[in-house]
Image 1 (cartoon, rainbow, N blue to C red):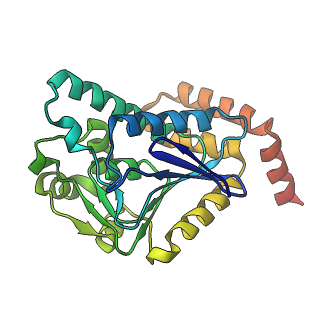
Image 2 (cartoon, helix red, strand yellow; image 1 turned 90 degrees about the vertical axis):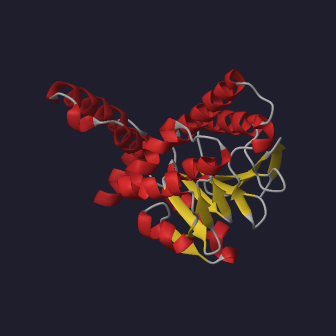
Length: 255
C-alpha cells in the first residue's frame, strides 16, 4: 500500500480498486477551509478518472473521525467569509453525494457536526464501538449546512433530527445504528479492515450499473412524468448494455 499526503488529506492506495482517504489534521481532524477544499477536489479528481476507485473515508488517530468545523477559523471572521466557507462545505457534501463509485465511511472516534453530515452521504457507514455522534452547533453559535440538515431528517426522521440538532446531546455507536446513521458497529481494531472489505466487494460490481443505480437513488423519480422516467430508463439501458463489465457480469450469471 502506498500513501500520498495532500495537505490534511492522506490518500492510500488499496488493492482491488479501493482507496483510503484519511482526514489527518491533529489533534481532532477539524474541518479547516483548506481541508474542505482539498477533500472536495480529491473526490472530484478520483471520480473523473478512467477507473474511478471505491473510497473509504476515515480519520487519523483513534479519538476523532472529525471534530466538525474549525471554530478557531470562525473567530474574527465576518458574515460574508463564513458564507463562503459554508459554500465550500456545501460543495464537499455534493461531491460526496455524487461520487459515482462505492463510498464507505469508517468512523473511528468522535463524529461531530460536519463530520456527521459527511458520513450521512456515504453509501455505507461503519463505526467503532467507541464512536460518538453529536451536533454541537446549537451551543456553539453555528449552523449546519441545509443540505446536511435535510439528509439528517431523511435518515433519522423528524423527531430524531430535532433531538440531534436542537438538543446537542451525543449518541453512542449503538444508538446511532438504531437510528440508521450507522450500518455496522465493529471493534476499533477491526474498523478499517471491515470498511475496506466492504468497499472492495462493492467495487467488484459492474461500475456502470452501480453508478446508474446510485444516480437514480439521488433523484425524486416518483414525481417524474412517465415520459421522463422512460427516457432515463432507456438511457440507462443503453449505457449498461454497452458496458463491458456489465456484459461480463451478465454472461457469468447466465453461464
